[in-house]
Image (cartoon, rainbow over all chains, first blue to last red; front, side, top):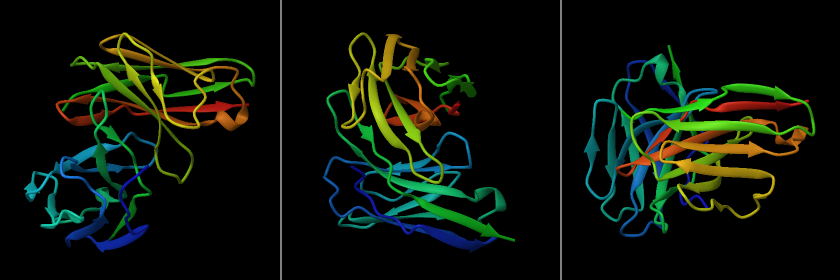
Length: 112
Length: 113
């Protein structure tokens, strides 16, 4: 049901930018791209979401390609606390509102 | 951000017993809540969509008689695992949607002996 594919794991040096890619080639015009992360044994934490335009908030930036078939989450200055599993999700419209199906995610390890 | 709370955060029960997990939206009303299950080292799997005042919508392959969902108020949804067995041991996570964003609870870890 997930409409996204992500690399299973990535490493990033502390203080450097972490760029996490996501492919969503079957995305429809009204479907948003969301990013969440999950630290071990906790509930997922919202990071950012977008439709067409690039988005930025205090946590990260989201770059969506013009054809919307892929996106990249950027953590500008990774810290050890950013070590987590990052999920890229395409929300699927449903009768009662959008549903969120999780893919396999990318396990990001920030290295000191 | 909005707060979603789950209780209990962990529970151990004997095989054959039933376990109820509560999910509350603390500072907003949620007409729709979602229940996920997560096995170790795996992703979250959507089990069902809980709708206030009506029956839950279950994903394919999820037994509705096994996982009873009740959403009696705008701030509370409950998941009851009936006649639990060891294979039901998992991390159960609820979420509620507000203005297009999904807020998650901290999860409930169920261990069935």
